[in-house]
Every structure is written in structure tokens, then in C-alpha cells.
Image (spheres, rainbow, N blue to C red):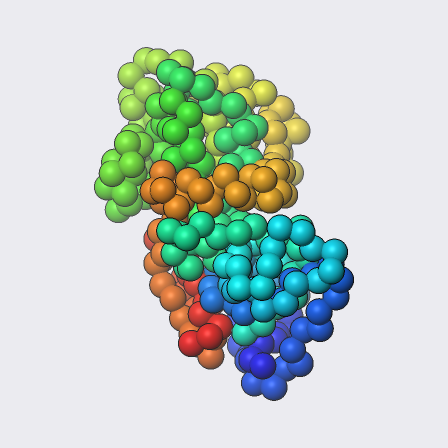
Length: 300
């Protein structure tokens, strides 16, 4: 079996594919799946440089074995979910049954294998600020993996959404009914202009930097500011600090998968790579040029 291995002190050069890895052993609580798609995320790149952090991995695949204590999943099912290690970057993976949901038939494999880490963080951020019909919400980093999901979900809840992003990505936001605002030396004034004098009810930060301070200057109530990155300063501003694991687990993942399957949540796929090109996949992600997800195909 092929599986990605790595030396955490060598960066991307330390990633390699073991062509003769041992197949995962089934247990009473796990599902063995043949992986069709596994997204890589920015946190995965950070973990390549000596970090003790073990990234969560998105995955989607076909079930080939089910443990005795797993309910709701059977051999032959198409599933999606996550693994808390490198194991999803492999032809076969063993996953606790509680970390998988059934894949909707109309959901593409690449999207299914990209739905957990960043989209769930976007959902957690939206739930934290609780946007409602007619409110105005600002999302910083609105075309990133987390921010684009957050902006779409806030709009689905009836809010008007201003998305701070690169000017080169403004059209993507417009296509989804999100008001684009460029980040530059005049970001604050750009947001105020886009708001047209209206009160800004909530602010979601997916970038870090000084966006919590910006939210405060915009007079957004502290209880309705959320960040998925700036945990260090969240308490200082009274903001909520949330992440992937705050979204609600498999129930929330099921909700996202259904929205994506019917076209109400767009998860752009930028690039795909066969498993043997895993280093190229990580370089593409590290370059920060791709608009959308970078996905590995372990069966290719």
C-alpha cells in the first residue's frame, strides 16, 4: 500500500511516499476506507517545520471494512470525514466510525475530501457571531478556505456580507452576492464606504494581523467578533476564538455536505495531484497562489 510519510524537521523535502506501507488493521470501532480524495490545508504546511501539532486531514473514500461497533455505515458506502494524523494521505485509511458521514450522491469526490478542516472552521465562525436576516457582516480573508465558506454561510442566513480580499479575487465574491472590498492601506475606509453608513453587526477574522482592532474601530460589538486565527489577542478584544472542532462534529459536517451537494455552498477545487506528486501539492499550497483547495488522489 502507498502512504505518505514525512520527517517533520525537513519541510516539504521531508515528505515522501512509502510504496510498501502496511495496510491499516481493522478494529471494532473503525472503518477501513479506500481513499479517493484528501485535501491538504495550510496547517499541514506549518506542521512540516518541527511543529508538535498533528494536523487533521480531510478525506473521502469508499468503505471496504466496518468494525462491529460502528453504526450507520456499511461496506460499499461512499463516506467523507477526517483523520487526526497523516493516515488520510494513503490508499487505505482506518478511521473511527464517529468521524465519518455518508457522502451525498451528487457531491464530487474532490469536494467531499475537502469539507472538514477549513469549511467547518468557517461554519464555527458564523455560528459564533450568529448573523440574521438584514444584518451586515464583514469577513476578512473572504476568498480563503475558511473565509469563503463563512461569507457564503452568512449570506445564506440572510445577512449582507462584505468580503475583504485581494482585488484580483473580487469577481469570485460578486458571483456569490458578496460585496468585495480590497485590503490595502485604506482597508478601513474601503469597508466604511461599502457599508454606506449602515451599522456593521458582526465581524469574522480568518487572517489575523490587525483585523480584531479593525473590528473594534468599526464599533462591532465584542460579542459578535470571531477569529479563527488570532487566539492570542481574542481575549483582549472580547472576541470569540473558534476553530474546526467547534463547529459541531458529524452533524455539522452532514449539513455542509448537503449544502455543497445541492450547490448552496461552493468549495472551489484549485489543483489536484496524484499521491506520488505530494511534494508538488504542498509546494502549490505553500505558494498561496491557488484560489481553492489542493487535493491529493491516492488512487492515481
